[in-house]
Length: 424
Image (cartoon, rainbow, N blue to C red):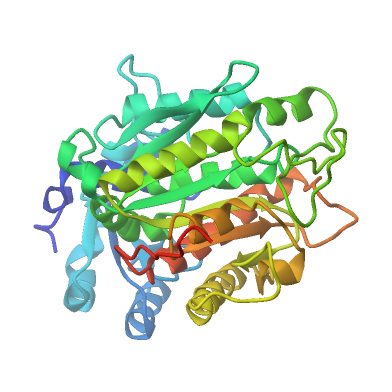
């Protein structure tokens, strides 16, 4: 194992690996005492019952320290230099990967790595509060500047008030034109202005893909960046979102059919026709453009609230799509993964059974664009007394459980499948 190091991982992955590890170092490991950890090693390996028995024994014998509080798929351990030989004998057969051979080097001046060109630290995004549009957009620009090999900022369009509608494109070796033919996974949030936890959750997904959060998913994140290109837009309605930040919170928008109103002053006034608003038009045109280059294999839009995973259709209760059983299975995977994290029960429902809704973007993506995996997620809470006013103390947990749900979806996607519904 001693010969293994970050050199065995490609450059991009190693950078993400170290970044994520540093962001979850337990508080007992203090950068000011970094010299104490000279030649301490950090290993990561799969987590299963056989490995758990060995790892827990080694920890009980004070030969290792587990750095992963609640292992699920991966476990990270710290090994003191005096114990490397003994621990190697026990763990060699599990083929651990060594994140670092010298923890001291990582701690010294880099506890929150990576670094900007001016040597200032790049911090993980603050998920202890809700942020305005400017702060969110600045973060997108920051991560693109510091990870230009796999992040680009795109502008989908401009709003009525002149704001950019920003998204990030994330993929490995992103400057290579060949990456544009990778299947696209689309994730968005913030189309309804008052649903603040939606942009926060989408930002949490971005941060996880980039290695700032959820270290246990790092291997899968790396795999996804190599296989797919993600288009992720955290705030599709920046005008409305910012309005709720400065003025009235209880404000929203919608479109046509059930659950809408022809009253121009209604919260659910749909507009004069489909895609007559700049924000929805921008999404439509981007999806259509992407489908001319490659397949779009996931369309996932985040809303709040009610703790639901919603599958087609929303506009009618008179029929279900031929793919209904597949959608139900995907929904079960999502809600089970969510429940496994913090015990929050999300329900897997046909959207119409929750609330008849016309003009839902996931219905459009499935029916008009033929994207098989097209879904709407309603985030926390399920408490009508709280409603859209989810406390900021629940932002991180909401992000964590939905990262797990997204991963469960991606692991079971059907790739390069475009349905033909003849626009119905």
